[in-house]
Image (tube, rainbow, N blue to C red; front, top):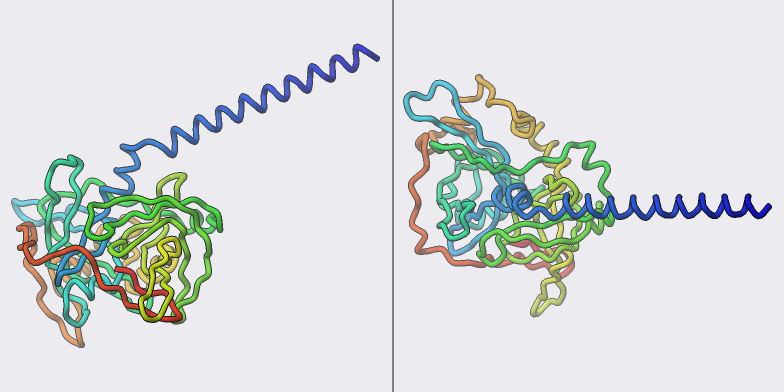
Length: 319
């Protein structure tokens, strides 16, 4: 009997040691996976751009950059940017339309001491009700760092308490991350469903990306934050709403831009429209900007900070 008890104790001790060893290994893997600064910068910071204009600033996300065929001696790369439609509306200071120009977009360089790269963009499509917009720019070089998009299956696995980063350009700063958790997957605003994140965000984050922590994949685009108080509304930074990527996929599908998130070339039958500047606007076709938009615009008139759209009983749009 004594020997039997001793064997059982030994077996339990072995199991305990194995569990402890496994727990330490899991912790080591998590540290290695979640805390690789260079990888995190490449996945989240470098794909983040800053939109400026009209004395305001917001954020955007590089999601696509491909070389176009048959463009002559000089290479032509077409790049797409996701952002919030209200950010575009604010920076262009005119009625938002397809074909409108965003004069000043800044991309972060890997060298922190270097100046940001500046270029122009054109509005390809937007949906004010969803607060989403797709911009296009043509340059002579590829953007090497793009956001990695979560699949629909990935999105279905996320739930309340799933950790996530918010990345944007609050108050006109260079892109910066904050960490939190998904706190709701069903917040309705004006008939549209948003997700809520408790990572602190502020004015300037709008249009920036939200990334799940495990694989640093894009899961949405920042849109709004809550405020309270009628006379002097106070921002609640840990109650931010973002457009979930699944809704963006549905919108891109409906607008004929599925190839963007699928990583496919621009369809041949739409290259003239999308790449070279013919877009539908107010019932007609208009010639858009020149093929390349590399020259930096005048930044002297820009200043950080966007005015929020305040609502007493609903989330205020966050720039």
